[in-house]
Length: 637
Image 1: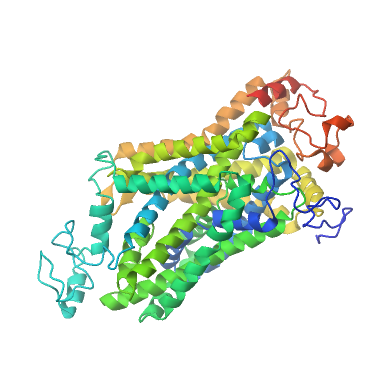
Image 2 (image 1 turned 120 degrees about the horizontal axis):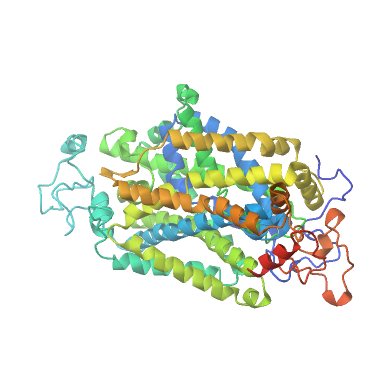
C-alpha cells in the first residue's frame, strides 16, 4: 500500500506526526526519544554492521562459490533479513518498550525477552574483549616499524620466517633467506610460521596449551579491556541522548577507512587476482544446501535479529516514524558493507599471495585469524606500514563499538523499563555503570592465557542456534498467538499504511520457514569446535551447549511461571488468559491510544498527557478482567 492510502492522513516525519509539536521536543518525556531520525538510522547501521562484515562475510563468499554466493545471500536478505528487521523495529516502536516490556502483547512469551537479554549479555562480554585486542594492536602500531614485521624478537621461534627477511636484518636463529628460497620455504607451510602469527600467539595472547589452563591474566590486554569499557560507558552515559551523538562518528568513519584501504588495495600488484578469486562464481555450488544455509545464517546473524537490540533502539523512536523505510535502508546498507569489505580484504590478500608466490586460498582466513594474523602481515608489506595498521585497527574498534553500544543499551533499557519507577529512570546512569562494571569483571577471564579459547567457545555457542529458536518463537507468537490481523492494524495505526502484502506473506509463512530451515541446517552441519589444530575437550563443548540452552530455557520456564499465576477455571481458560495481551499493551502515550486502544475513562486534567503503562494501578485504564490481579503483581516485580 502507498503511504497515502487508508483513512489516515500521511504523517510528516519531522513533526513526529504531531503538527503542533516543536520538532526538537521529545514525545516521550519519561524515556526520551532520539534527537532525530538520522541518529536512529546511524545507530542501527552501527549495530548491524559489525566485525562479522569484515571477518566473516568475505571468507564465506570465498568458501561458498565466490560471486555465486551473492545470489542466495540477496535472496535470503529479501525473504528473511528485511522482513524480520522490519518486524522487530515496528514491535519496539509501537509499544515504546525494551525487549522485556514489549511482551505485554502476550505475557506468556515474556521469556523470549529474557532469552534476548541473556544472548546480549554473552555477546556483550566477549565482543568487548575483541575490541580490546584491536585497541592493543592499535597502540602497538604507533612505532616506526610494526612489532610483527621481523623475526628478531625475543618471543620468536626458530621456525619463524618473515616475508620481508632481507640480508641487513640478521635473524638470531637462522641465516637470512634469499628471495628465491622464500617461495620454497613457504611451500613447506608446516615449517614456516609468520612473525605476525607468532606475535599474536606467543606475545599478545601468550596462548596456553589448553582451555582449562588459564595461566596468568595478560595485563596489557586487561588494561585495554578497561579502556574499551570506559569508552562504551562514557558514550552511553546519557542513554540514547549521548550515544546518538557519538554514532555520527562511529557509524560513518569506518566507511572512510574502508575507502582509503580500498583505494590502497586495488593499486597493489596482484590485487586483481585476489578480487577475481573473491568474485568468480562457481555456479555448481548454488545447488548445495550448505551454501543456502550459510547465506541465511550470515544474513540472520549479521543483522542482529533476536539480540533484542533492534526492539530497544526502535523503542526510542517517535510513534509515527516510518520504520518500514528505515528497515529497508539499514538492511541493504549492512549487506552492501559486507560486499564492499570483501573487496578491501581480498585486494590485499591477492597482493600478499602474489608477493609470496602462493595461491590466494593459502592466505585467506576468517575470524580473529584474519583480523589479527593475515591482515597485519599483509600490512607489513606496504610502504608506511604503521599508518595503514593504525587505520585498519581504528576501523575495527569503531565497528565493534557501534555494536557494543546497542548491546549495553539493550540490557540497561530492559532493566529500567522493567522496574519502571521514577527513581530508576533518574538513576539510569548508575544502572549503565553497574552493567559496564559487571561486563568488565566477567571479561577478565577472557584476557587470560586461555582467553581466546573461551572467546571462540562463546562466539560459537552462546549466540548461534539459540538466536534462531528465539526468532522463530517471536515470529509465531506475534503472527499466530496475538494474530496477524491485529498486528497489521497496529502497524496501520502507527505508520498510516498497513505492511505491504509481501511482508504480510513473509511474516506469516516465508520467514518462519526459512528460520526453521536455518535451525535444521545448523543441527545437520554441526561440527565440534576447534581452534587451529586444537580440539576442544568434551567438557568445554558441554559448557558451550549449556550457554546456548541458558537463553532458550527462559522461554518455557517463564511460560510455565506465567501460566501458573494466571487465573482461570479450566486449563484452556488459563492458557487463553496467559497469552492474551495485557490491559496496558499498546502505544505508550495517551495521545496515540486511538481505536481499540482508546481509554475507557477520560483522563483528568492533572494527569497530563502521559499514560504510565508500567504502573497499571496508576494508569487511566481500569484494571478489570480475570487476570487483573496478576497484572498488578507483575508491574511491581
